[in-house]
Amino acid sequence: MIFLKKNLNKLVLLFYILVMTPVFLVLANGETCPPGTICNPLAGNGVNTLPQLIQIILVGAIKIGTPIVALAIIYCGFLFVFARGNSEKLTKAKDALLYTLIGAAILLGAWAIATMIQVTIVGLGS
Image 1 (tube, one colour):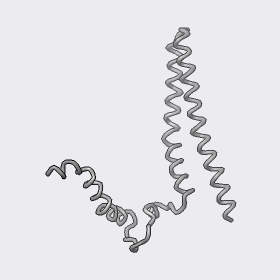
Image 2 (cartoon, one colour):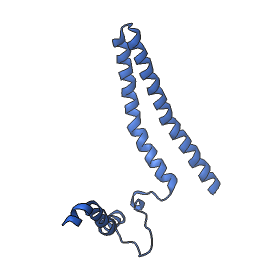
Image 3 (spheres, helix red, strand yellow):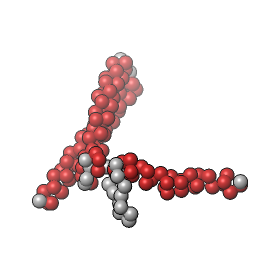
Image 4 (cartoon, one colour):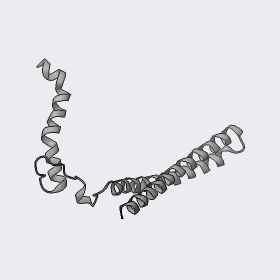
């Protein structure tokens, strides 16, 4: 009993690795993989290459990040309005706007860099 209490987390992890992973692969692919091979769990979603996976992740980040950036800019506008000439609050509002614009630039820059890398890889492959 003491062994189970000390090693319960390890036993649960071992159970999931040995038993549940093949179940998830069957559910993801709709078929079993031949023994000794590694099957693509994302093949059913049309992801067959690493650039496609990166593109899907970045598209999701852009879809989530764009509204967040818009709301942050609106929040910065409220900070400017409520500052009413107070220099400390104006500094806080300017810093918030600066950090919001830096975040938006990083978001769009990541998309641009990933697109350039993908175009270069596809161009080298042909």
